Length: 159
Image (cartoon, rainbow, N blue to C red):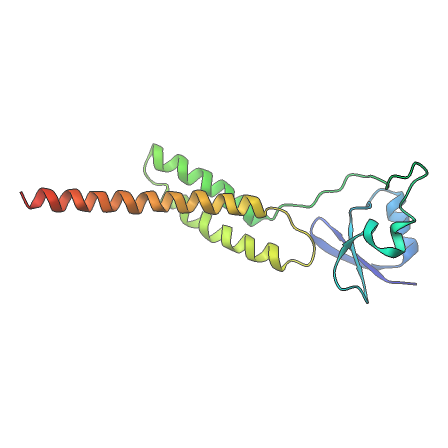
């Protein structure tokens, strides 16, 4: 009997035996989209894609069992997105957008690195990229604004 590890809310649980996994399916604690791994597998796969469980998960109607299941977004990705949005709002309201842009860049890069390295599927890549784009845009606007300010000062000083 195989010993399975399964992913719930971005965390690895287990090992559990087949019967325990079957009981969790029946109780709808996990579903066909839950990622699992056992010794001998190259990578984590959704339960429905493993040869051992594929046939067991098909209901009489020919469709895979369906229960609520979500791939969570990485917290750093959400933080990066919020900082990116905040940086753009702050640059156009009170000119302190860099206070949000810098953490937006840091958390965006941390999120992308951790999402790539995480053994279980983790969402938020798009959020992290959007946060990075907005944060870098804000910082770019500050650099351009600073260059224009210096140019105006230099040209005014030569007159």
